[in-house]
Length: 103
Image (cartoon, rainbow, N blue to C red; front, top):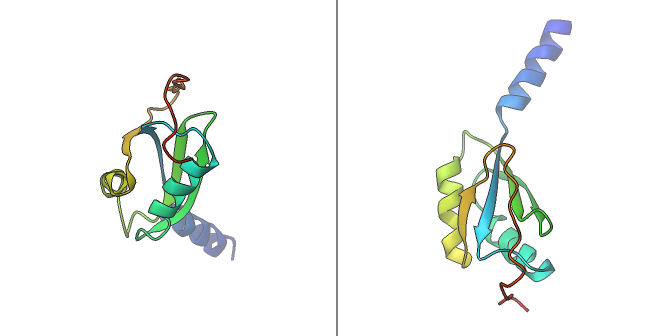
């Protein structure tokens, strides 16, 4: 019984992967966050989208059997952004001189 529970947990974990990206232009407000979430929401395999204006990151939880990191990054130009994967430990600096186009 314990083995069955461990196998089920391992299978659930293998059905999710995470991609953390930063965008160009950067996010400035809730409208920016909503534009990105709306653009990604119905992409095949996307399970969750977490945006952070403060950290300038978009975290996408997805099913790797249905999509991959390259396909997800390639989706961003459809709604006016470019995406670049954030390396582990990288801190994205917010550009305070950039203006928001989504207001």
